[in-house]
Length: 109
Image 1: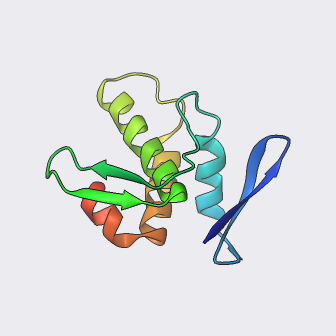
Image 2: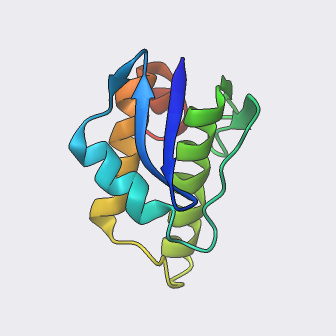
């Protein structure tokens, strides 16, 4: 279970199983939500690894994180403005690793 803590319309903290997420994860999340392509996903979503074809259903928080990582990487690969640094991308992908290591292995690694 997770809960978003909001202030002024922005997510300022996230609780996962009642505990605050690590500072690095929140640093990346805060930077990510400033990007125009960042999207909060409210429902479980199935994502497919484009190279292996593996399908993974992610909860809304995991979906939000993975979607950001996917969009960031597509922009980076196309040499477009990612609006976030490599460090922000790394913070987000390692946040997914922390939440769901199997999904990380199936979709990113």
